[in-house]
Image (tube, rainbow, N blue to C red; front, side, top):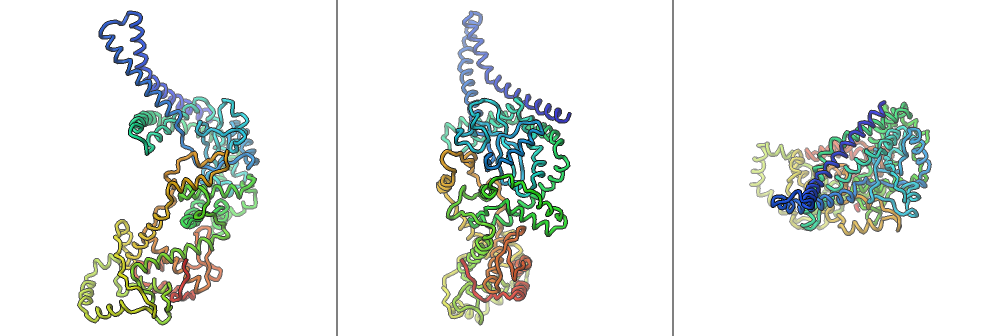
Amino acid sequence: MGVEAGAQVARARALVVLRIRSRALAVALLPAAVAVILLAGALSGRLVGPGWDAARWFLTPVAVLVLLAAAGIALVVARARPAMSPTVPIAEEAAPDLYRMVRDLADRLEVPAPSAIALTPDCDSWLEDRTHPAHGPPPAEEHGDIAGAGKHAHRRHPVAPVLVLGSPFLWWMRVGELRAVLAPVVAGTGPSAHPDIAAARRFVRGLDAAVAVSSAPRRDPVSRAVLAGVGWVARLLLRACRLHAAELERGVAAAAAERAQAVDYGLRIVAQEQVGLAYAGWDRLLTRVALPAWRMGRWPSRLDAGVVAALTELSRRDRLAEGFASRLGERPACDLLEEPGAVDESASLLAARLFHGGPAGPGPDWSPVDWSDYPEEVVDRKWRIDAARLHRVLDAMGVRPATGPAAPATGSPTLSRVLDHLTDPAGEGSLTQRCTDPSRDASLTHRSTDPSRDASLTHRSTEPSGGAPFPATPPEPPPPFDDDEEDLSGTTPRSANLAARLSTELGREEASAAPSPSASATASTAASPAAGSPDPLALWDDRALPLFPLQPPRTARELLADHLTAMICCAAMDTAGATPGLDWLDGPTLLHNGERTADLAPKILTLIEEGDPTPLRAWLAELGIRPEKPVRLV
């Protein structure tokens, strides 16, 4: 009864949407109908006279214009390409067991089987209609992502939607759990096959695509004016259909959920827990592990396999997840694929493109990295690049190399140089404390009237550090804080200045490294599939990448903390024998004697906010890290 009730609600709402379409058509045909009546009345001799003649002369051209406008709008709605989710198509030859499982599930649910299966790098699953001509299948001998579609391409029968499956589910879930999770999704093909529901969905998708076409940039004035009218009409119809289309989808979902209760209901309750766990592990893996590699031009080629490692590590640490590790003895759903490694690599590349905006294919500046090489090729290189950037900024500021008996005589970069610069020499405190400290004014007055201090500063400015010449170039003026002023309000003046300069330097590097549109197009062409095979990435608009940014841009304070961490880790690797490591839940980590070191964040924040290096120096001495020794930079 629940299945019938949900389907009836969906069909009723679909009929309302179709009535709105019929009313729009009637409005477009009304002037033409009146003009035909007037012309017929003139031919029959019944509607004659000056008034009828004037009405005919006025309404006939109006009717023609309205018909032309309606035909143009209908043509745009019919031919506009609906939005399609970027996915990795899975051919039946690449996953026969997966297709067999889905078809068996559809048979048990007594619904049509999905026409194809595709993967998305996200923890979600849905049905997607790709029957629009713009998404049409290629010739039969070249078709590879819809099972059996090439053999019957000449028939005009309805095509079932495509099953879009979250790739993390395949690697983390077991076969039974995946079947239970997919049951409500596959059950949605039943209501989708109803002619009224399918027609209503096509109409709403066409209106949405027409709005997107009317909003496209870079058109001549005439086209913009014409498409502005098309967009206005499409938006008007969408507003009229919005509520009914939403209720239609709710009815379809209710009918599918009710029908799926007969299949693996108990197992589906347990599998839903795995959905939430997989989502948490996937989000953690992307933000903590994949994002640092993407920022360096490297993309991990086994992200889905990394989800399993991350969730296994979580089950080892968290008592609430102790029972999840026992599942690993069962058959994983990725065994349903013939070549899970190749599929994982394609999904990983698509994830980097969606969440970071990377190129469409590998290249000299965008290469894959295995998890075994991640510590050396990503973690070590990231720390040394950040440390090198930190010292470049210090050079531009005119900061002298570290002084002292243990300082290197060559002026090589050291951790001591950074610590000495950020140490508050007179206890000046943060910017907020300095603005409210009356004793600071008297101190500044005394220092400004001390001639011996001026002479000392003049002598020191021309004296080489440790026998090594240091360029006497004037330091660059500090950049304005602008948006970072509030973020840097609790830091010392030196920390705030250095953080602002680092933010400016990093922004300059990212702007210079941003690929041009022509270069992006070239990379996409070079990475496209072989001739004759469809490129799934060519069917969606990628002008606004990344489509789903993982994190907001880092603040100046966070940039400074990251660069200080990188410099400390470089010193630990070069002077204390530490090694870079990968933590599946926290990302790059420093290993000392094979064990993960303590969190440096509180000690670094103390240095940034208070100018006090004491906690950090104590930690360095405990691990045997020598800050006065030079470090190797990139």
